[in-house]
Image (cartoon, rainbow over the protein chains, first blue to last red):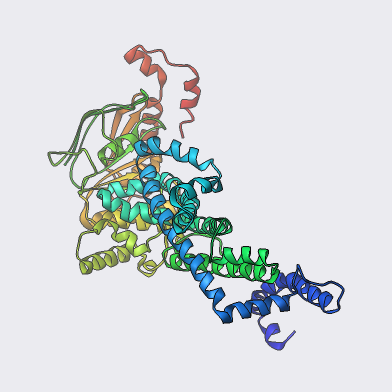
Length: 270
Length: 267
């Protein structure tokens, strides 16, 4: 224990927690990776189907250097962005309408709930028949995946807005637009951001499904390519790329929403 | 002047909450409405606030019929009901929407200063104590300078010390512009500390049972004999307002006997 830590034990503990806690979580995967690397190096296993970390890293660097990784990531990212955009736009309009107006809810919600019960992948053959095997069917599938969590989240959030706060708006004679802008929108925002994030998660899931089913480029194509040519390192590289891009986009939404959600009364972790 | 003309309310489910309440409140007067639970006192207040439309009778403010929330009528609820996404200052200025920014800032700052929370302007509502939050709610209601201020059991969720403190504080604030105060409460002391007149209501359907004028000079000493005497008068009236035999004598209705035991425990 250092002198500084003794002088200010709580601060030292907070500081050490900040670094040791994530580090603690790294021990298991890093140890496993090192062990596998060691086993393959010693020749105890061939590592042909499960490449060691060094091979994966080399493949990652190769693919990045040739530009294949960036190109395919960009293609996938574009598909997710398009599908997410369409899905969110539709879900926001319908979810807001269904949450705000009981009539719209009674009219639309039963049908949408029925559609929701269908596993979205089941639509793929139909989408391909209708929209062809290129971008349109893929984007539509992603949009369908994104739609439901956003729709449900927004509708639920609007319905559960505190009636007492709405009454404050009425007492101060807000117009309908004022009510939406000054009461409903801010009240709904936290749940909406969560809905967007789970929608995005599903978007990434569905882009994989769409690309596995037939694509000539994209991270999903790298997966299939790696499988067909027996290049497991390429598959793992694509998986790692999915993880990085998926997490980054999720983080971007959280980051963009943070300034608007600072008021939330949540238990923050030290 | 606020005039209630035989205001009645029957809810859609058939509950007869209010049975023809007539009352005239002069500008600057403080009137407390007191009664057991279910006597329709909150219903009455919400009708005056324009939040629920009465099903009979009329509410007139300076001769103008009130059917929706009125700009000259402010309301303070039992809970502070601050908007959690607005800083304290923005909450106070909530009712000043369409005014120029500078005037808004000035009036908000003055109001916060007046309720003693000038240093809390940049805080979030969640960082306030219960009493502070209710003071912000009072400031928010007073900032648009209402002619009538309605208070729906505004201090009932607070501890006794904070409550007494806020009652005195409310009187201070009232003295600034002397709006009409109409206060619903189930706290006899609160009614006597604040009001010029106390209307005792009786339930099923809610109507005015008795009117007690409180002619004690302000500030009122909660320990004085006169205060105690007024308290006993109100309590007696309240007891009688819940006496079921009166109902039978006046209307001939037969009520369920189990309610009699509950009547003594109305608080």
